[in-house]
Image 1 (tube, rainbow, N blue to C red):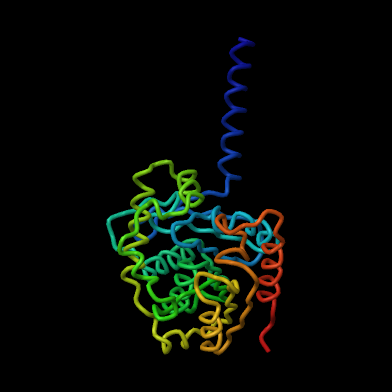
Image 2: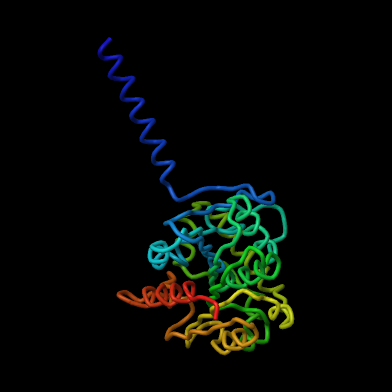
Length: 282
């Protein structure tokens, strides 16, 4: 009997530990618009949504800066359709659809307003959230945002016509497979992103001007998306601000393809973002 009691207690302890791990794990799923959307919650404070770049995951875009942001915020980091833990489904992939998925998740989490930070494709999605659901957005942090084809160097979009998975940086491939170890899912994600960029259409200036939320535009001085475009966007918005830091695309975040060992840029960026988010309206 004593042995049986011991075994029962052992099972209960293991079950309790399993439950605790499930409760403390940052990874969660929500059913939004027919999609099983993966997201993580880190830290406490005012809500801050993080949206990754194309071909990326939460970790590959924000792995080095997320812990710094979570010191002051409840960070809600999302992996969008066909990226990382979030599987692809049979529906169009667009910045508008991604934005609607973000909006639906916030509604399900009972978050009336949030700050939203996006990198590259994620920045374009963040702008679409502000355009389509302005009531949900407190402030925007837009790193390497793109709204018009003409902003990119000549031939940029032509490059997508013959793009193959071999053109995808190895660190991004590895990060994807760490989140989802299915090579077919990686290829599907790559093809989805390529198709979206081939079909990229401008967000008209008059639409951008309607964004009333204060917005901080950030870019590197050698960014893949020209810093001049960030300047242009910051001047379009009634409450736009601009920061240009030295570095290539994503370096200011410590993004996986751009991170320089020992770099202080993620810490500097986190402080600049926090200062902006704490600013009171004048």
